[in-house]
Image (cartoon, rainbow, N blue to C red; front, side):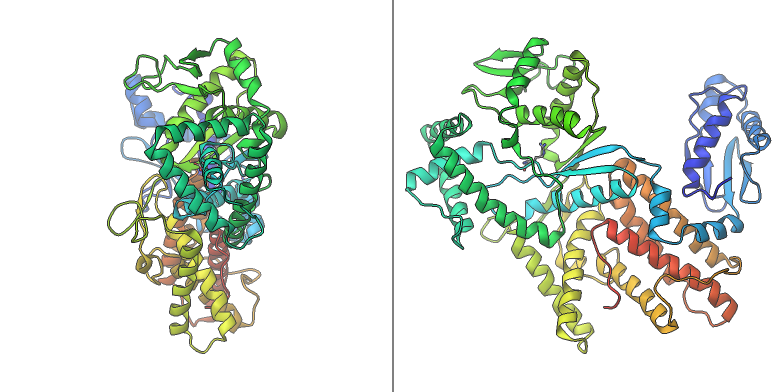
Length: 587
Ligand code: ARG
């Protein structure tokens, strides 16, 4: 029996394999492995009960048969994992101190964790689509989540063994360009990408244009026809489009740098302009797309909301009335490209929850289209998130009702953190305080976004996210800095344990060791569901378990505890990095 990285997953597999050749079970048996009530063990298999109920047999007898078969198989070393049967037929597993000691030796640094976690995605080719903003405007607070959530999910996938490609699918070919081009033409404005205020100019023009198109249906038609002209290759509109793209990309780049977002490729909607024709053809040929009011649409009569009879009806429009492509057509072409060029086994899309219908229709359409054309469909996953709310419970805005600019928000985070750090540590040199403030401030904004289940809305509160108490980045960063200082004082490199630590003894030591091992389960949950908050909750609990343990004077105990302390530092560091936060050595 190897020193398993994630015992829950291994025990689950072992039970399934054993059940397949045990009378009364079949290959479909699901052990329903979960963390156990700590009084009875570490993991519990609950799956026997429903099986016994369905077969009208005695669950306890079934559990006994399975445990006996497991013991006979010789695959479980009882000096490492103790198995017991509890109640009506639950199977409990308890890790022995010997297992924990071995685990702490084997999983001693980030690369060992990475190797252990790699089994989850082992080499799967995953294309992750983020932050994918619509260009032609400044980034505002609504652009925060795709970057922060996208980056954390990307790092998690990579850590767990995925062969990852980050694709920034810019919205650079849609309605907003029609509006902007119209506004530029009407105001005879000369956009100059080299001008310092070019982005403000664009923003103002976009506001003018959208006010115009909202007030006047004729202007809306004009904007649509500017977009159709652009998509048809009109030279004047193409030249304007190139300038707009240049201005907004430069502005986005600055924010990507601040938030550490580095796409491997940037293939925006415009990249697919010559690839949508094939989509219209194939979907029409396989009978999925039909003309409706001049547009090309796909209905899903097998779906309650996307069927033609649904109220209100919601066809998946893949070509507009005026012949222009749209979000749906470029997204269909994108799936094909990702399969053909990147050999994607999985595509992950990180966007706002308001796009759920789009992605459901997209995935349904791709599924049927790939089937009809004999292609293998990659797994398609929509990682959506809720809204950031202001203290008034509504989507966060400035006092004047405009969206908050992301650049200003991140600057404010750093400024506020600088004030806090300067108050706590007035003696540190100013550059160091500035460096700490950047990590703490931006880390705090990030962490506040990640620590809640992503599908919920959350309320943005400076006081809460910058607090040094509670489930926050400053709290975790401080825990890591304290561990650094222990090693500095001991004259040892950070994360160095003693060579052969004496075996774990006390309840608190064992509890902390088990918590450390919980990293594997947290990674598993976060990566399986693509929900980083599982990792945040875990790190917060680990820091708590650690703080209630510290400080002993006995030297033998001290040596052993130093190893636990080292591992805590290593796990917290690895975990924070996965969330996009680089821990500090002092603060
Ligand atoms: N540009 C879109 C938006 O800002 C997000 C694009 C997501 N990716 C995709 N392939 N649809 O809402």
